[in-house]
Length: 274
Length: 324
Image (cartoon, rainbow over the protein chains, first blue to last red):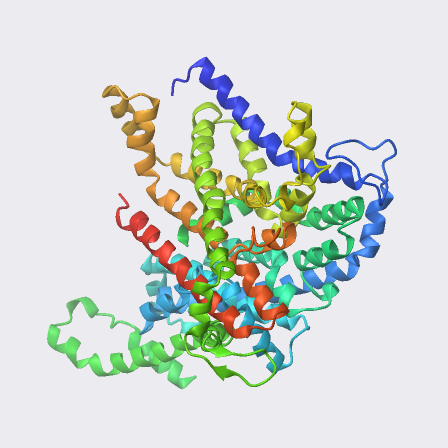
């Protein structure tokens, strides 16, 4: 493609500008976090005496160790269970084509664009009745269920696009349905499953509404849910609030930079299939 | 175990299957069908866990929302049947209806701007930065997409505050008189919330559209150029139609993000000042959990869900059916 010099310069300038606009907000909270606690700094200014101790304070104030544990628990409970359920259902709908598969798929797909606010009120009362309000289960169970539409849709797409020969060959060899699933299709589906797992982990970690409504104690919430509570308490102490935000961003950012390709690819595939 | 084996035997084709006459095939039908039925039953067992979970924690509350919406209930005492009057209240009360109008205004910021700007950015990357610069831009612009929306809200709450970076920058370029607390001003709060949405969603749209662009057949551009098309004509007659599907996906995701916005608004403005940034999600939360008007909250929730479907379905249809 031939591109004129003006276009080259203007285009590169636009890209650099957009990158600056994306990164500057992060730099702003980082520099603000280093100002003395309780002061009101300006947007982007390097402090004379960087207060690295703010991070330690925020770690203590935000109960970060409990929080990390709690968020990790939610992710570790939600992702594997949701993956197993979605994979099995996707297998039955996409590959076994059980009777009623189309109707089942439609039922799950209906939930794809469901706003969580639509069901949050009855969820609260349901969980109050079940006695699981304010426990971690209060977040874990609905989250697994809310991941089913996307999870089943995603895994079905994987299984429906597999060449049929594999299944046939296995059947000829006398494999039962469980063997077929466990020994043959599960290993083959590993890339699809791991992308789905990455997505579910990010979504669980970032989940806010469920945590806010269903769990009162911030230290039992997800990271995002706790951040909301932290903001409520420290809205006036800007440097400490920024330090807390940086700490809570840190795990996500590190994981993103490490698995950047994987995460982008997963999110893209996810939205295209959706 | 035995049942399992019979099923296997029934589905296993006969060794001389190809030479079988139609008649002998019919004779095999009965056991085959039996096997099929057994396999179907076993297949349903695979769906059951997902279906149960979905039914209990999504479909059941979905039905309950509709049920609640027909009652007046404070969440504790007895509920009174009120028919459709909660819906009428939503339609009549300017504050409640206003939340729906606000969410449509947010569509401009969360959806129209990110998708348009994303198209421009993606085509710029595609044309002038195929190498390292393009990859870096992609990675950087995508970053806001992976952080919690709550964090985005807090970050921008600070940037848009009186001493924040935005006002600092405005003062530097000599626009000190327009500086203000952007999220606290009746006139600017909604666009300011919208700006946060642009920041979060631009990267997603750019990356998705870019992925679509790289798949466009280059010969389409060559023949367009032979016809004397300039950059703009090329964009309208080749790029846009080829990206119809990706644009549809971008619109769907971003419109849902706008209509069902909660996290960003809750953290950055809480719906204020006044009701200037109140959206249905925030209003449902306030009605149900702070004002204890469960019925009214549910009516608004039902309307929100219907609204999302009504807006999304035509987009899905347009972008899918005409897929080249």
